[in-house]
Image (cartoon, rainbow, N blue to C red):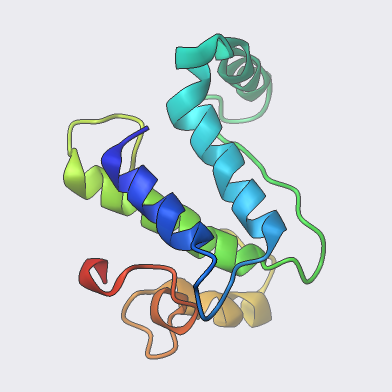
Length: 140
């Protein structure tokens, strides 16, 4: 696990946080982190291999996709913000690390949802990175 990832996980799971995250949000980000950074180092490379195989049989096999299923009201937009933060900050720290990205595509079913997802744009005045305290102040 990278130092950036460890710092974010410690920040997100700090019991003294004013705005505590839901357990399912923590579990979702931990799952993504495990698949990307940990699994192959601890004998669970089969997980990533299964995901790659499933991606190859679907449409557009050049684009690797992973989905996280969460219930209505579980805070999926917050998790998207956490995923974007984790990926972007790790890419910034290690630009050559192919596990991380600094470009993101969010696909949504319509204009109403698109407008609600503006909180994922860092330059939005109501962005979740500040509003939901997703990043330590020095990393904003």
